[in-house]
Image (cartoon, rainbow, N blue to C red):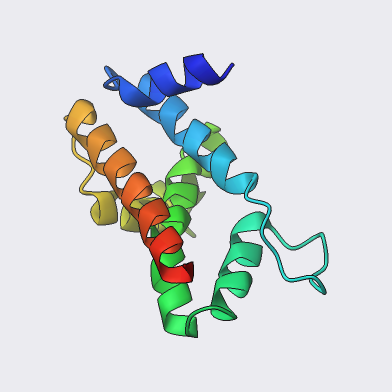
Length: 136
């Protein structure tokens, strides 16, 4: 329900489960972006389709910059389910995936999950605003 989603997104994440839940909500928004080039195959994922569409409206680097926050959210999404959170080294050790480490650095994710959630959500909203501004 829309009102529940709005409430969930606008309240602080109290723990890791609530943080990841909010990341999953944002990720599902990104997955449902329905902007694509007319000739583009429907199997192209929504984020890549958006990036391709933006490249026809702004230059390629600008399109990459505009969608970077969305990509970083998709990387954070890899923390759940847990089997996507880690990769196994040749020695058999589990380590956090590079994409997750990059995304955590991008959003300045710390043990303060309330602040970390605010960082992610603010970046998401700013990214939407920048995309809108760029294509107007």
